[in-house]
Length: 167
Length: 107
Image 1 (cartoon, rainbow over the protein chains, first blue to last red):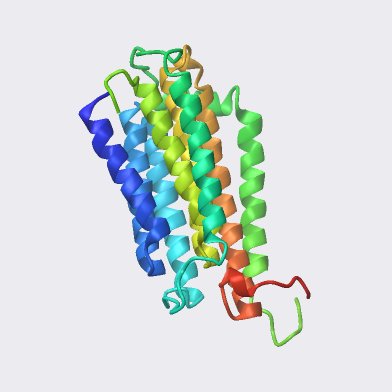
Image 2 (cartoon, each protein chain N blue to C red):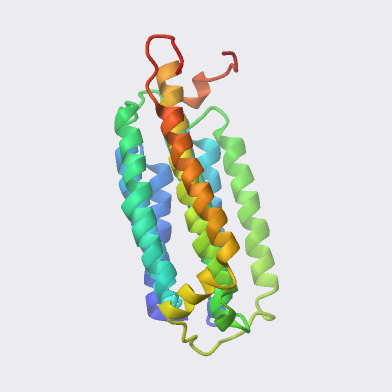
């Protein structure tokens, strides 16, 4: 366990906690960006350079910006005066704690079976590109169709309707 | 964490904690956008698991976990775009993003 891992894990967890606990929604979006950056650095720490930079491009560059746009378009930046948590927050917290207990218990119980260390993988971006257009070309095409459909769908869903006349 | 914790177990514990934080956020927040933020955190925790298993697995050169994570990132981006579009449309319809006030499913 390296020193860098503890720092990055603490940064990521702190960002995620702030993202779900802060009252102001814009602050939540900024904390979410910190969590995404921490995750990207964790990916880099795991020698997954391509996934780390894809994480920065897609999540910090696109998803976080989309979230901020949605917050500002929906008056979400106004902090509600009667609390930010739902009426059933205790049940939700209990479910999340139970899920963490089960996952953590499973990891701790099987920790001895996990590999202690592994040689550093030498995977180049060229290999990833060749795999994407070779073995994984069908999933790549399906993702392309999915992204196109999602883009068109998002535009149609969010399209402004003229007074009661759907397009 | 003690020194007996292997690196892989450490990453898995961080991912499990992140998943639980995201689940707690999705289940307890009232703002629909914050629920989507919780879902994004859960997806990212799953990606961390995939990358960690790829790094410490027996065949990292096969790129299986890495590819799964990359496709997962792409699908999550599509999900975020459609989800936030839905939130904006619901806001136009109901004039609120408070999920506690959206308690009916009529046209």
